[in-house]
Image (cartoon, rainbow, N blue to C red; front, side, top):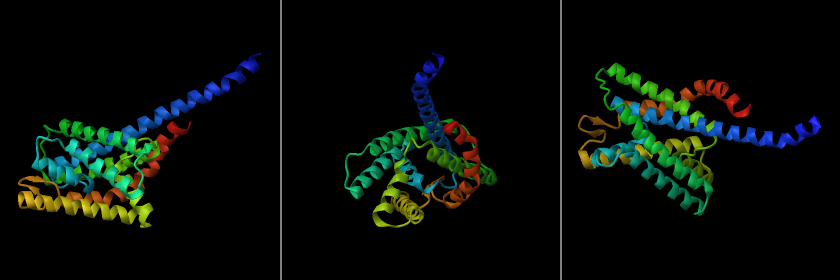
Amino acid sequence: NLHIIMHLCIPFEKIFMAKKHIAARWLVGTLGLVLIAFGVALSLKSNLGTAPPSCPPAVLNLKWTAISFGTFTWMMHLLFIAAQMAMRRKVLDVHYLIQLAAAFVFGYLCDACIWLLHGVEITSYLMKIVLILVAVLLTAVGIRLEVIGKTWILAGDQVVDTFSAVTGIKFSNAKIGEDILLVALSAGFAWICFGSPFGHGEEIVIREGTLILAALTGLCMKLTDPLVDKVFNPLLHE
């Protein structure tokens, strides 16, 4: 009888474990978004320039200060989703809904992290560089957590993946193209509005920090990915 009961319990055990893994994946993926958002906030606080995907919302926020950085971020992600619809010629897809939810969550996480750092004053150039390097580390770890969590999908990455699939261009090359385009558009808008391609007065959006974040994040991931996998994969597959 005990053997029969144990046999009947197996499906319920599998369901419980599946739900446990789903919860773990959402937690890991959300932690990834939090780390990326905090990396964005640190780069903005450094005032040495932010990562290419954050340049457009940062410049727009300088022009229209009543609208938060996070709001401009999710607005930009809506454009990325619309671009995917145009390229795929497919309007209805559950992945769009996930990206939409991720856009709102990530945007307001950015606002929350910026608020947390609001009272922090950094004047030393060395400390500003340290902030940029910490932002690189957090972004690298956050991206990996987002990937292995397999839950949240950020539209900024997905639009590059879609473009790569449609055109046949390698993802890495398409990503570089996206970064260059976003920085160029941001610099042009800043030039038109403020007379400078770097930002507005003492508020800097595009500078050496932008180059550091663009160049070092991928390299950092080669070092941090194995460690992240070692720590978090057991939680997702146990």
